[in-house]
Length: 270
Image 1 (cartoon, rainbow, N blue to C red):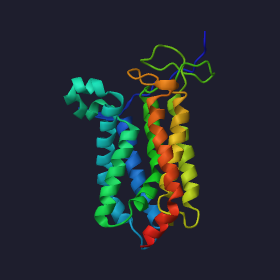
Image 2 (cartoon, rainbow, N blue to C red):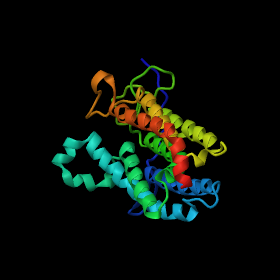
Image 3 (tube, rainbow, N blue to C red):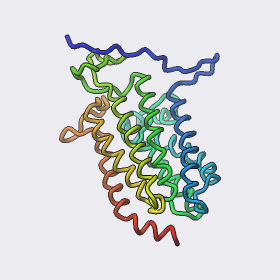
Image 4 (cartoon, helix red, strand yellow):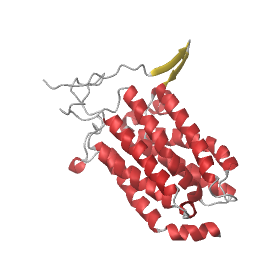
């Protein structure tokens, strides 16, 4: 019989006050948004006199929230459960029942970033670079919330740190949520933090955005080797998962943004 570490029984509900129920997952989103606003505002001070400035970032917070929620929900509907929601279209609007896609939320923020920056007259990459530096913290908190909820568990394994997750089939599995929290959250945040501190890096608009795309894409592709694919989709051609498939374009676009960074600097100066 394979050994497994007992899964820590953490209540997914952080606080319950009568009919008001606050879950750790909601707090992860809230914490991610607040940190991103604070951290991006601090980073913007490294470029005095340039936009976006802290006031711009305060105004953008609402746009970001809408982009993440609408994009994340729409991505989950289209990428992972299209046939289910085609038969139950009204449930697509029931976001309180869960079901969010990072890739969809990312596209939602991209659209919000483009619209907001064009409205105020500065490069979308100037804002995107700041958001890229802060995003890993939100990813880290989100993966921890996945772990607390006992969802999105890993593939069966016999490693000493395997866990048996509630509502699973009882097999010891990789705690892949923690792997992804480390790769997509801690490692990616530290890498972008170091890069952002390099002289002139924030003036090369698009570089940090590209580095985030490449870093997240590679981290997600790696993490998916340990994560159990969604039951309704399973493995795709050649044994890849939907998460890996959606991450490949991110890596390619990220490499393109890094390569075009010198043109981004001239565009900013203009």
